[in-house]
Image (cartoon, rainbow, N blue to C red; front, side, top):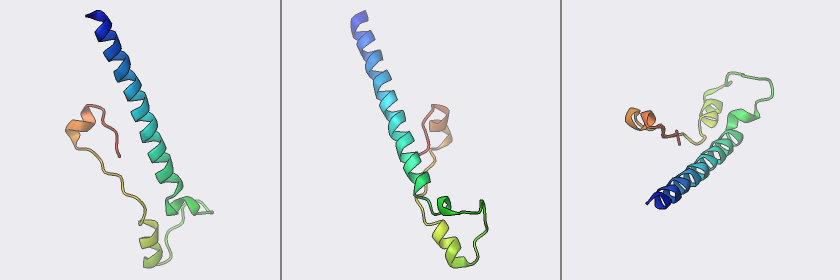
Length: 76
């Protein structure tokens, strides 16, 4: 019985590792492709409404509810 438990624990750790890698990769891609990443002079307010809409046109992250965040579920 302990061998089965050890294998299950190892499988869960491996799955958690790959889930974390997947989350990090998705987050990095989102940050690198966001329109605000191309600002050259630090933070600069948009000049007009069209530029504001362009900057906010990136992927929006869905935040889990409080119960799921309490159990360690990541944003994504």
